[in-house]
Length: 637
Image (cartoon, rainbow, N blue to C red; front, side, top):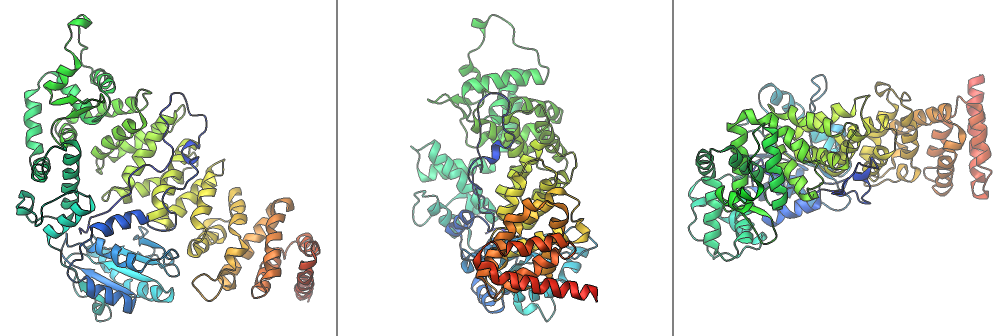
């Protein structure tokens, strides 16, 4: 499989509303009752999708042996040899419901290590893509690989590193874990893809033009997708016919589009051509209205003359090579022609870009579009802007769509832009950075906050949980509601590493603990005694670690000093209940509570009084009073 390959689960995780009227609940997109993809592992449906299509490259068996024996393996090979897909499959084979599979991301702060080893948790299955790293950055990262391996061993984890192209020696300490991956035969990969898509094919495969060229593996995915569409749209054809149509769309579409646009010189024809390309598959009524509004957006004179003398829509569509099917939807006759048209207009008619942006902004908010039509329109425009040169256009659109007054339709459109950007291999990092910048804005609007929460919930939580945690925390600090906090708790639950990371953010001086009122409420939710006493994959509970205990003491001291007792009483009762039941961690739990309340005599008195509320807690009272007396005695001395 290709180094640049990435499988994605399709569909928008969240409610998509197509009705008219302004939004009545700013958290509409979050009220689905589901968190979509798993917040604690790479979506299993993606990995299962990849597994069904995966052909083992040469060298994978040796890589598997090295990974199982030494917990780390470094994959080398030429571009297109399938290292990233191989990395995912190696980890997938080791996975289970309790082990997190996620990618390590290089840090951008030049004053800190490039690899944040705290992102490796107990039993984690992690991979690090260095395929595009070069120069000075590679020198810096290479020096951190040995410490990273040590961290992986300490946490009983497994690591797969995808090396840069033409990497020199890693040194005697690491070269022994380096395995070269060689690309599998393209025809084998093609056959596996066709089988996975349930596309009937001759065995063996007949001679295909596609196989005449040395192909990268991502081209196989695109080619089979076109074959599937040719089959679905033209079921009367044969396998060979589908393959020929797919290859024509893959190879010669750009030339055909240029010729078509050159032939159609009238403004209304080109306007209709572009409208169909942007809304391909939409109902004819939608196409008609969109074509007219596009002419208005580009300041083209409207068609004059009596209505009954105007050219019918079906005839105008036929002139541009489109047709209306039995359901009233408009399609081009040639496969994937719409995508080629969009690319042509964007690349070769740059004066249209501003007008096209305004048209998309207006059309996406039209109540006449269905949810699917709106999503397709926004995704297609976003794809044209997935370039560093045009990315500010998307940022501006998202901000405009989420600025009051707004509508549900606009917020959904903004969410689609962000989701599509996060799923783009080349631009995902830039979009994650943009979300970070938005999340840290003190004037963050509630509508934009909702879009960020949805993006973290449905995309980042699955692929980059550490980055999702940071962004959700910034939003939780600034929002007036609780949705970001609830999503953050969902992310942290069951992931001890992320709970430790969040406790650090709530108690470390560099993160200004206590400055944000919401941080204290967040701490109370994170201070779950059951989770803190669960050893998980380790032989000891988190609360037995001195660092964690100190963080909890700081957190409780902030709670006791800044929040009334009725806010924290119920949480204290949970701690006392667990302390009474868990003899092994009893002293650690009580020490944290007493350490947090050490400066407040009234708090210590209340803690002691609470141990008398239940008979089962009575032994705790004796321990509490002993510790209080010892602490105050030491202070007096």
